Length: 254
View 1 (cartoon, rainbow, N blue to C red):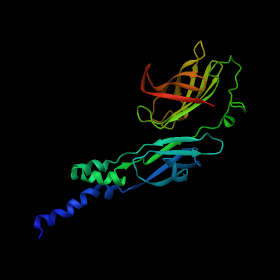
View 2 (view 1 turned 90 degrees about the vertical axis):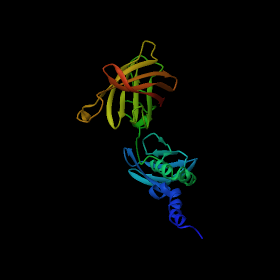
View 3 (view 1 turned 90 degrees about the horizontal axis):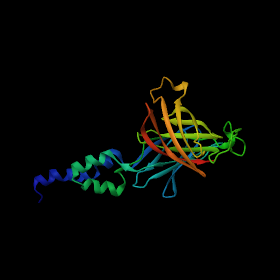
View 4 (view 1 turned 30 degrees about the vertical axis):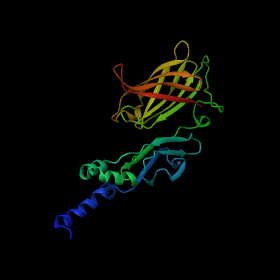
């Protein structure tokens, strides 16, 4: 016969392994927004489609240790992709503290100890033929001297060094660089001049008037070097000549 103490403790021990599973479960919902809306999006994990929606929309996915690739398409825009990393669910740490690691082993097997972002926002970049200031062949319209960087350059990242998402759509006209940078949905107008060899540029981006009353950095700094069809460099918040939140930038020529 079991002693009374075991009768009391047994239900608690059985509950510990499923702590995070009960609190969070093995599935989660993800809200997806695109700018502009109306994009057809699908989520792929290990090459297989696990969910799909049209923005603004939301999906329910099973939680696993594998990252998910979000891919969105809309007529007239480039395909946009974002990696959704599988992180550790906060409830897991409570589970380890309560269960001494036993509960974590259970949740690790079921996927309940992992979690993807609850909300994803991405900006779609117009195709060259639909962008102002570009010819139908996608090349920048320019009366200035040609350079190795002539053309249109685009790129995006879901997160910079300070946790903000950004996207860039830049054009080079001779030695002049113009375009737009978006950071946390705030739009910045970019102006810059390429160096003497036409292969590098340090530009300043100013917050557009429409966003003057929105709490955000007033200026951004962008430093780029152009090589064939790729541009590399960094961008960050321009604070009295100092670059804060400096983050790597990789752009592709369209």
